[in-house]
Amino acid sequence: MTLIEVFQGILESIRLPLQSVIDSESRLHILYLFSSLGLAYFVYRRSRATESFWSYVFRKDVWLSRSAFVDYGMIFFNSFFKVFLIAPYFIFGFYLSYKLEVFLPEVFGYPSQGLSATTTIILYTIVLTVVGDFATYLVHYIMHFVPFFWEFHKVHHSATTLNPVTQYRIHPVELIINNVKGILVLGLVTGVFRYLSAHPIEEMTLIGANVLSFAFLFFGSNLRHSHIPLKYFDWLEYIFISPFQHQIHHSDNQKHFNRNLGSKLAIWDWMFGTLIRSKSVETVQFGIGEDEKERYDSLLKNLYMPFKNLLATAVGRLSRTPMAERSR
Image 1 (spheres, rainbow, N blue to C red):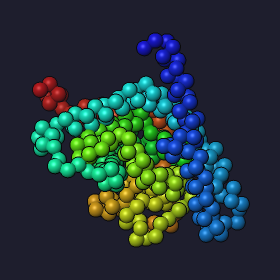
Image 2 (cartoon, helix red, strand yellow):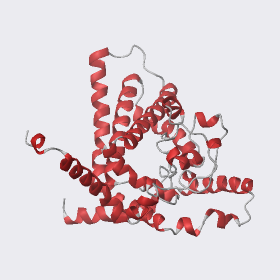
Image 3 (cartoon, rainbow, N blue to C red):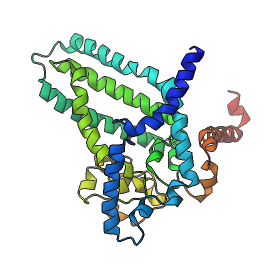
Image 4 (cartoon, rainbow, N blue to C red):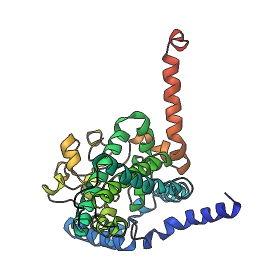
């Protein structure tokens, strides 16, 4: 990589977060910010708050908190990883899709009748959404229940205030894991539908796949990481995770730990016993407890603390291991 390419990569890393407001695939797109603002106004009116709407939404103790500035720093820091480490490997998803398209006919033969364009769009959209969401649930479950991965995921939960940028408060190690998961799901699902469809899938799938994504982003996705308690109908929270349900997921109350792990769909939490509905909780405070608060109150601490904790754990286990066992 030449010096010019490095410089261009740095500029691209800085540009990515700033361009989020005009990127239709970004949660921070201006349309989704305004739609979330409209839903926040609905919650505000129902709350009968005495303060003004703008004071209710843009609380200084939320947006100008120390935790929030860690969020702002993390979105820029992680953009370097996206540009230099992750983006070059997205081609692997297309390679996987192509290899699967070649492999399936060798094993099963060609379909007697390929899927129509309409059927492809509908089924691809549904399957990609459901499979992707289930994969996200599984990865999230592992992040919470496997101590090694929890040390990295803890960075996201260390936020003591939530704002839409908190979505991007992710340790680079977790960022890589999430992107590998996304690349594998996209490659596998796309490869299967390229095999089943009688039409060029690349030209049509983006239209269909973006429909459900648009709905998720438009109807309050930014409120998931916020102090605005938008709840759904009780029965609907068995199917979809509401913004307040995700806020419960960020609660520092031990009763709420490892609950509501789903991304878009609540059905996985319902099936595996990790679901809490909004009606069960009055208010929440965010974070991982007062004891941990100061250990994650800066960008640098959030980056190195997982490695420090893992090293301390390894040293502790080694010191407790008898010398005879270590020499085997």
